[in-house]
Length: 129
Image 1 (spheres, rainbow, N blue to C red):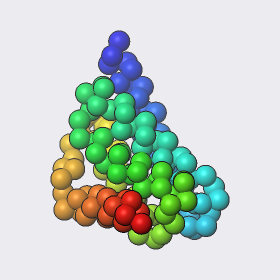
Image 2: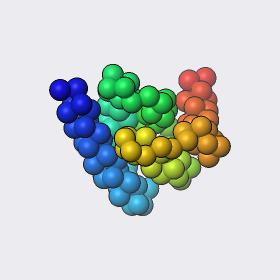
Image 3: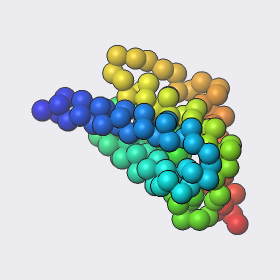
């Protein structure tokens, strides 16, 4: 039973992340107007909370970083920038790879760590303001 739930979660999450990747190809103003911010926040929130319960380890940290930045964007505490879009575009494929059971990916790679530090710095600066 749990394997069916896990499989459904992975399939749904991969579908959402594929859709988000397409959405992120739009102009920045279209991303804001097109409710993409809410879509990214919701997907990251779901992955952060559900993946660890299903035994999918490591992805929750990435999802939490994305969730925090997109929550700040949604709440108007941050403005969408090209850097946020670029770093999100880097992290989405990593999350997709981690969700695919038959694939391995190094979530500690230097590029991923840089993107996560960038997102964490945004939230730190925002919290101190």
